[in-house]
Image (cartoon, rainbow, N blue to C red; front, side, top):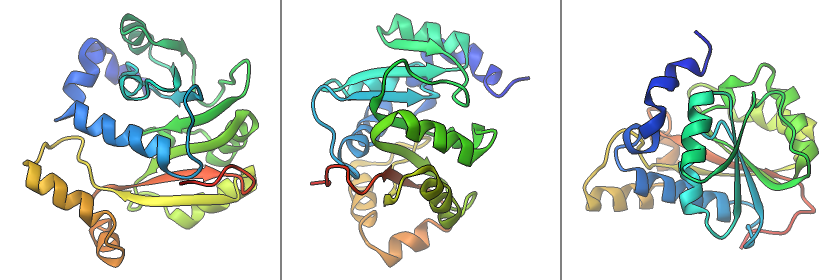
Length: 209
């Protein structure tokens, strides 16, 4: 079975069923895409690699959302949602024109060779690459070295404590969002669960606000 075939049967309701609270989770992810590192502007093109059914596009309406996915079923599901999505392997895909932002969520482990993939992305991405990283699976410093080799000499990182699989009560969710910005305590939490959100860019890119 290929890396994407396991998702085929659930493509029609991927966004609705893959997240305990799809709206909260994807809205929080979209906010990171816009604000972490160089800030996005209305009309910027966001290229979402391994986009699934394109649900993230619902929360990036000020930007021009485009997706790439290797699963034909996911591509069809995304197109039924009105998304501009192409079927391709993220390792090989290159857009016809540069994009402002490229995103990879829950999929960087699909890279056949991470440094080669990052170099390819750097070639067509003007502002930043935004991705999530499980620090219990990948060392942040190793990824930073690959980003630098690819030409991304700036890395902005923040903890992301929004659960994909659980929908906590509102007070708990607010506490987790505060905990994201707690410094050493947040890093302790990351030893057990949750992820970093990362924005890789070039130092000459526009500063974040």
